[in-house]
Image 1 (cartoon, rainbow, N blue to C red):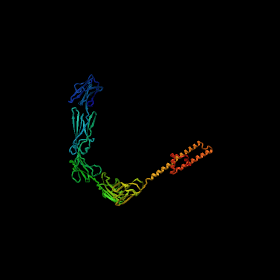
Image 2: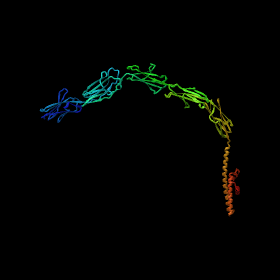
Image 3: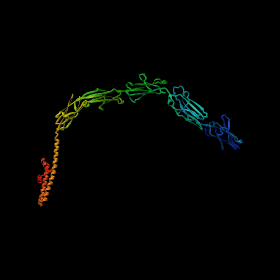
Image 4: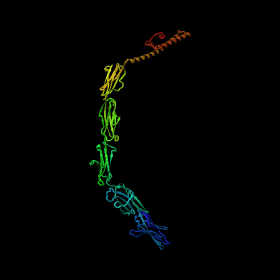
Length: 597
């Protein structure tokens, strides 16, 4: 028989019993026994050549069977329980052929549940003099008793005097299974704050050893503050006056110790909240070295401090020289400056009416004209710190004699009599010029000023004038520095000239048309007369007669055509005669023909 047979709980176990004899026995009897807890043996089965039975009234009566084979027989135990872990005996007797007995230990296994690890919730201090409990690991319902091993970052932890203690509690449940709880007592250091602790359960199974590992946990380590760090949280970059500044300070202790702030040369504590100092609308007076201190009583060095240099940058209002306004004469030069005191390098740009006219703190105005006059704005900025900006201005006044806007000083105009003209005069100068009009050749009621616009250095006047004759209009502009004039020479056109010319042109065209019509009518009448004479027989019919008629007709036709040409050039008296004839005056036919002979 085998010394040991291993089986999982609730499965079937097979215990073989093999035997041989030196001579063939007459009868073979096989009996199976089990050792009770008290140490005595109890038979559970009997078999011989004639029968095989399971003994009644035992704990195995309904769970075992015996299976014979050529070499012996096998005891089969159904639904193995933990209580079945005991010795089983096979006793064989061949009477005179001999007898013998074998023994097998049945071992039963049940794997435990996966381990569960929990860390202490309150945290562990590095200041503790002895190892403190940091975690507990438990595994339940295993058989035989499982073992627990602790790990730190997957490295086994072994007990060490004054550093590591492992306390194990083993509980045998009513079911016979084991529950094992292991507590890890560990002297933590600051480096353990990032470590992961876990436990591993090892247990036996048939013909092997298996393990199961728990999840890793991180424990809360309490340690004193050894250093603090201070930094400016906002705004990013450089700080300017008017900003809100947030300064943060944090120590490396756990739990975080209270933080206080003060200026380097002052012991006055500044108002802060949870390590945050807020300075609202800072000014240059807030520039200083700021300190933060940790109030950790467990710290080895009680004065744990860090410092921050805060610089608040500024830009003072711009100062423009000359101030406010400056009066110049035409042709003069001026130097203007624009500066602003700042903690950083500045840039200055000059503008006039929104258009950039120069860069730099100094602006030079050369050979002043009226166009030079106006307001100049300077804008001072800090390139390295956007948002810092100031500005100033200077008003330039240019004095000089009046200056006409138009280049022409004498203007020639023509207009028909009775027409109206608008005459314009626009003048620049300072002091502002006065404009007067001098108009000759026109009555005073024939003109009036209709527009007059004035600015600081400019006047615009428009007069409306009725033309009655040739006129000379003079615009006079004067101020303290001189006089300027502008002359309009207006030639009038009589009203009758233009209509007479048009009538003569129309009459000439009418004469030509009438002459053509009269000529055509005379030809028609002449032809009718000859036709009438021919019918009455008063014209000769011979060749000479025909020739005469033809010649007479040709002569008259030629004469008529010539007369038409003449009449196109005739004077008005002749036109009147022709028109009367055409209009139906009753005259003898011979008289009409004679007119063209």
